[in-house]
Image 1: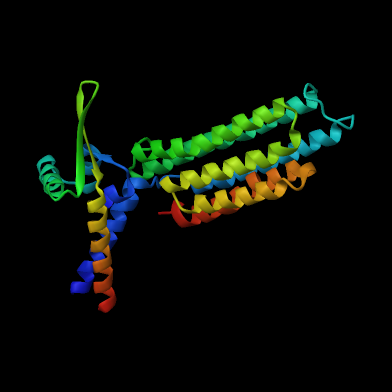
Image 2 (image 1 turned 90 degrees about the vertical axis):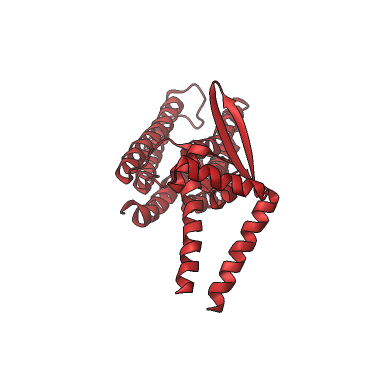
Length: 78
Length: 202
């Protein structure tokens, strides 16, 4: 979600490289986020190669911002 | 103990955000060099002007062509130096110089820059000379501010400074050369130095 907050979209390989996870790991986490409607998955073909790109939804952004706010409050409360 | 985890969480988030959108191999040293080239170029142009005989410089005159040549050389050398030094820095960091972020960086930088360049050339063609220096400075500054989304934040401040210089230079029509020297010369040296000491030695 962090990555998708500051980029309009990111493709599968970029996410995989930045997060350092396996294909299956990334795919299952993405599915989970999509079922919560936090991200949007777009599958298309670039020429002959399949390309999957992910972007954050409005709900996803809100949930992420809430999460950050909560974390900050917890740190400030100490 | 709990607090450490939250802090770690936040720093990981920030880390991912930065790594996915910022190109960090930009070399500050090349900025300093670009500034130096610009100052040398401005000096050469000043000499050319001093040696020119008549009061006005016409478009076809030898002096004007030499000045144009100087400007292009400064530009070419600055770009080449920046590209080469950034390439080496990227190598040292184990990063690829050509990835999604650097592509976005290039596009964001080039759109205002090329617009400004074309606009300046059109002004030249229409003999509106007084605005050329301000226009080049302003559009270059805008290009920097736009590009700073995809690289170090300092570039944004360089951009804003150059924009302000460009706006001021509109009021001082005869001093294009001096403002160029300030904007492309001194500003690059200063910001390049800041970036160099902040980021180049890692």
